[in-house]
Length: 357
Image (cartoon, rainbow, N blue to C red; front, side, top):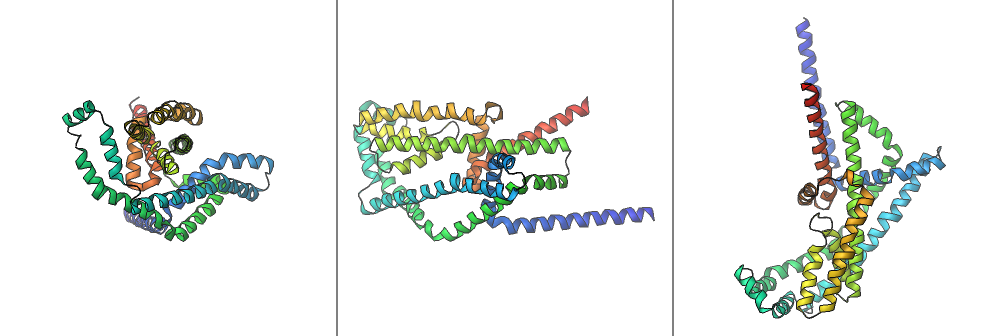
């Protein structure tokens, strides 16, 4: 009879576990269309939680008011500037697209100017390495690559068709962020009580998660904004067309460790030198090395702190992998998963050391 009771309890446990997994998967499937909104709601809640705590000092009995003021801060600091930048970027993309369609901007002409400016010794060196076939490159730009550029810019111009969907997701993000900011501590305690991990291990994982999210946003996104802004201003001052577009590309490139904004300004500086714009190229190189480049070396350690950084090679690989799998959201997801991976293996190593002691 005792064994029958144990068997019944065991079968009941496994049945409940199957139901729990099934319900959880169904719930995740329902939330999947709003994955981006939920992700960024969690991120902004983590980032602005210290501001909410400071507001509570002045209004301890008004949690709703403090959370609402924090939400207004998010709108003023994050949402409104991002919306204005998107509108300006779309206008610039429309201008570039129209110029390509009309033939006023031809990538093939850029390669012709590049070829005519290459010194003989450099052309011979490129030929020896098998990368000096400019004619093939012209054919590529005249065909597939140019068509690809037109397709990308054309797709950017159709983004207005998804404005309503974007607006809905933005509202969901802000709505969820309000409750995460106001009730974040209670939600964290409830989730923690349901996770079958030791308290110290769970606290380590939560702490690592919060630290990496804040470090990634402050140390990567803020630096990217600064470098993109400085790069755009420099290019505008040099008279480079579509400076805003290039500035945004610099900001995006700065998110890649060990590569950075040089992915954009180095080829541009080479083109300026080879096309005869010597002083513009020299100014761009100087600003790229000593102004744009120094932002990463000076600002990032101040915002993040060296002790919280994951090794650059891990950040690079996980950021690229995250971008490949999750798109723009992978900028945060990749390093966070890497941090969780390192933390879990640190816990495993500690447990093994304790077991062998």
